[in-house]
Length: 317
Image (cartoon, rainbow, N blue to C red; front, side, top):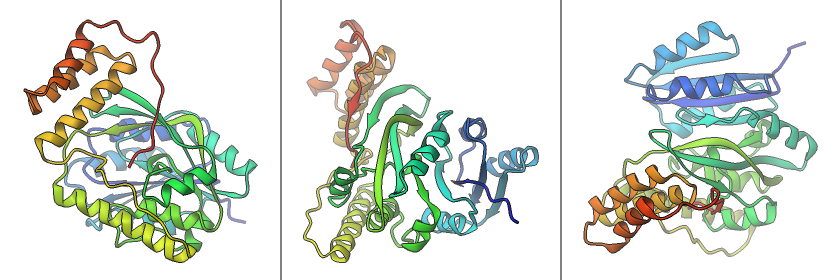
């Protein structure tokens, strides 16, 4: 009889040498230990594969493969087909799993057999590991599905856990959607079971400051709309796509200004004065003559901080 792990943790890696050690250690140090850790190095050109080999030599739960770059959705399907676990835990190669993440999600799925996928709240950190805010997502299936059908990320892919058989049943990730294959999967899974989110934070999600081109931003939006349109057709319903705004800064001064301002107020409301000053300064550098950036900087420099970190609830695009 084959002794299969309860959970398969899947991680695609591409040029992640700066964060990889912390990410891998956060998985290996989980309070829940019955897992395999499947990692594919998707054509990295840095030292990522050397780091992966070093960890794999010390822990036989780690299964590492390296090959040419094939892109994220194809790599995730490859790992999904290799997985042996009943549950699939997604992990990005620059995030940090909080210690009880796997234990909480496994317990929830075991107690709620009608649920095929569970994500949860998460903390946002920047590329230097500075805390910005905590985001919570809707807990219950009806609201999660309503938002997903409008194009919103009501399940957060980097901290999702789903049933392997359900994912295989719906065809896994859509490889023609490199930017919205996660939304497409949630919509398909929502047709064979329920979706859920935990209120407990599961992950530290690393938000990188690099901007994306306007072309890529438009491609992300168009793929999201296509995923929704396919779901509307499968379900025989009429829908309205709402997620028109990009979720990362575009390569324009106005977009960088708006996002730096948002990150700065997140940090201020979370009691992170120095981080708020950094992002206030970046907003000013983007658009020096806009008063909003100066207001953020002044508040961060002299205004008393909130008595306790403000918990912000927001559905991301």
